[in-house]
Length: 334
Image 1 (cartoon, rainbow, N blue to C red):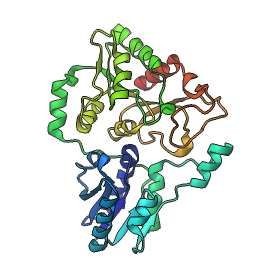
Image 2: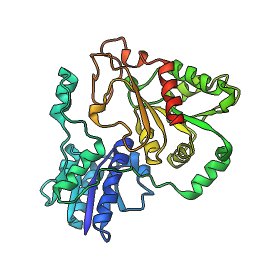
Image 3: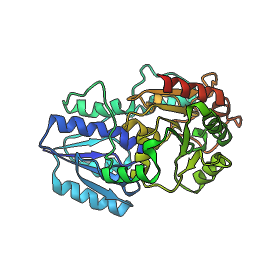
Image 4: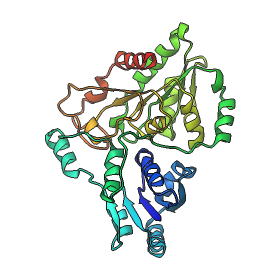
């Protein structure tokens, strides 16, 4: 049995699709499963033990080469878990292609007319619908998977002394600014966490890129070593190792949030311009979502915006440091 999965990006979406691998391998133990992915996100799956081969592309030429490879391989089943123009191109004219319902109309009605979904479904369970269309039974419970290299895990723990440290991971970045809680709020929260002397907690900040580095430096400034800024200093494997041993993770809605979900971490997730209907809450672990439910303009998008269309950014500015701190203490005690 040769099986192909099409989910090209991004990190969070790819991780949320990994339970599909476990279901397929359980149903077809001797199957060979390949996955098509954008080069930018290759590391997300490169150590997944279930995948036989990653078909990686960088541009349109790469997609053409993969299209030829798919036709040559003659897969028994293809699962399109992206369902965009690129995956339609890759699977066009082929047999046994199974897709899922992206709920595009539901999203449009929610964003533009605030018409609530009749049913809220986690994204992973939406992906499962493609399997069910192929007659494959799916579980009610699931856990995303990330293949953590044991040697890298051990080295990371040793390098940063994680084995004897109580710490909270903070992830203040996101792909869009409307998904980012204000950096000053993150700084106040971090100061409150390390200021509780009796609890002896540290804070480790992670992220990627120059913009997130600037935010992290501001949060960590003047902390006298109790806040460790590892932004832009870690590989994805090292990031996973840091997350794995955290007491809890405080994060915006981003890819690393779902990395934390892979390890069953306690998560405090701060949601701004998006809402639960889109299915991206970290459902498979112990979590608390902090959001401003009073705003009638939420959600203003299903993925994020560069700036608030109402210019008040109330969805994030309206979430206080107390709100997030209380959620963190609640989940740590649970």
